[in-house]
Image (cartoon, rainbow, N blue to C red; front, side, top):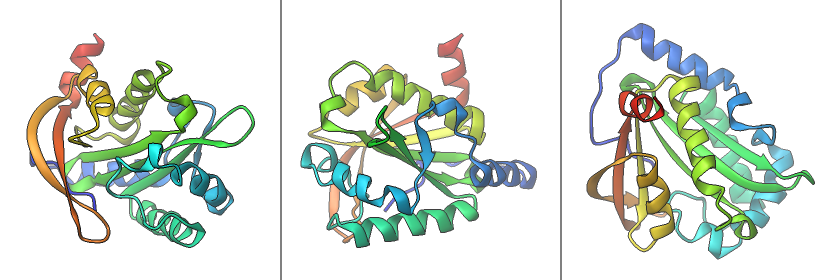
Length: 203
């Protein structure tokens, strides 16, 4: 289960409403031509992607077991939350139209904050595109969704994700317990990044 950032921001009703509307309308143009809102047509592709332990094992908030029923329910629940302005589930399609990755954005509009979890297909990992893809997602969260703070976690045995996160300028905030959907706990490293810091790095 996703948890809001440790840092607590306050918002005005106007800012909160704007973030909720941005999540509902979710313009994916900044995420690239292969980005799509996940729907029933992507269940099979997501099951294939997430059934690979190399992809799913490090991610704490995925539905388990991975099968068409659980993934379909996950898509449906995220669509319900998107209608409230609180989450977006995006799949990335490759040149053949196959699911090559996913990103799930959880948003707390009343705190102008968000979290992202995601993964790429195993054959696309370690090819140098992870950092640029992550940077595009972070920029989208700040620019398109309008949040002012992003919090992220990574398993303590997942150095690849940690390198991507730290390369983007996230500040380490120690560790936090990540609660899996089944109630079990995963110890995680935790980072935060503000919109001001992100914009300063981008010049």
